[in-house]
Length: 148
Image 1 (spheres, helix red, strand yellow):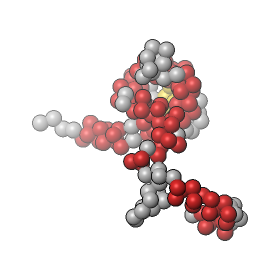
Image 2: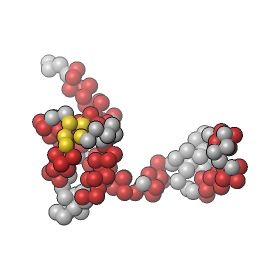
Image 3: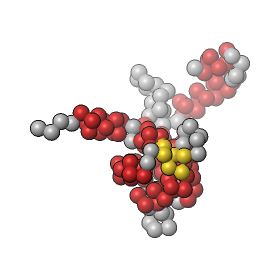
Image 4: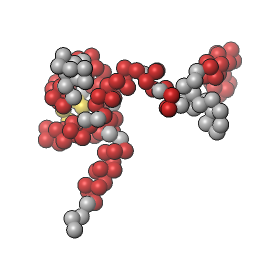
């Protein structure tokens, strides 16, 4: 990929080599084997490079089912104010405890979750961002569950 950027004139060969050297020195990338150069998630790559988002993700992910249930009651899309109130109700406020979200974290969360930019936070956008495979599996189980 880096060589393609050099060929297209987007990157100099020197910049390419600097990137390669940085990756080789950074122990958060896989150092050998089939996946050399790939992100090594076992060595806290994400926590190191996007620490703030991972902190938010850690607080929200463990409560995504509760958030989803409240979304279901409130509607499929919430205004930013409604979503902020939902976050404070389910996750908590940082003024209350260390597990809660700060106002700037909620604003960041809104920016990240409202991926279509329509001014609302949709239930599907929230689930897609924070539940992912868990939500799909549980949704399928609920949909196809047949009582004995």
